[in-house]
Structure formats: structure tokens, C-alpha cells
Image (cartoon, rainbow, N blue to C red; front, side):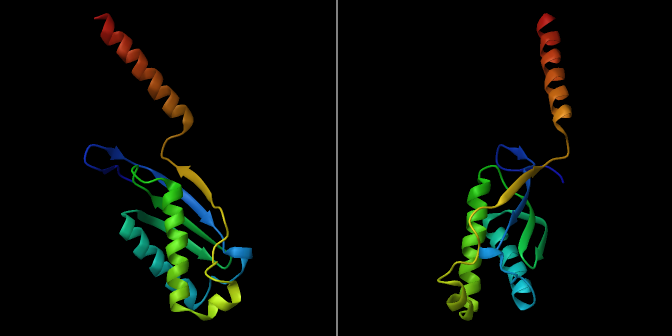
Length: 139
């Protein structure tokens, strides 16, 4: 993925995020699955978060997101889970009675950073920069 740009910042912050429905209910299929896909795309666009890839399985959601550095991961996940639940319950009031008042997603989530370099590459780059600075200062 190419670096993106804010006013004075170049960035490439990508994350793999997984979360589940409350009580791990196997409800994310059929009609609600396609509706959730559309809802997540819409919500990501509103926050200017890039939805690179995603999958909605019967009992969990996977997303690969590019989140601008001005937003925190927890802020984005809370927004996606909260607003998607409200939108689904507004469109499907029959779920409210079965699941309790607006409790669609379980608390918490899994997140992992995704990068195109490993830890060793970064350490070597920092060391090379340090050596380069020493070399420049000796001149």
C-alpha cells in the first residue's frame, strides 16, 4: 500500500481488526451480512478510513483498515461498532427484543499492526541513520 498524505504528514498505518457479536451469536449471514458490508463501507468513508479488505463470518468480523494517524484505533473501532449497531437496529427492530436494547457487539476487539517491514529492518534502518549522522558530523 502506498503512503498516504495529510497536510504535513506522510503515513502508512494499517491494522487487522477482529470483533465479535455479543455472546458470539452466529447472526452475521444472509441479508444482515450484505447490509453490514454496506454499513461498514459507509462508516469508514465518513471517518476517512480506508477499508482495504474485510470479511464477515457467521460469528466474527475481520477488517484490514488504513487509519490516519490523527485517529486512534480504539476511537475508530468504537465508532464502527457503535454506529453499525444503531443502524442495524434501526433497520431491523425485531433484533432489539431478542438481543436486549442495542447490544449487538461484544466488548473488546483484537488489533494487530500490519506493515511491509519487519522489526529487524527497522532496527537496521535506525542504526544506518545513526551511522550516517556520525559520518556527516565528522566532516
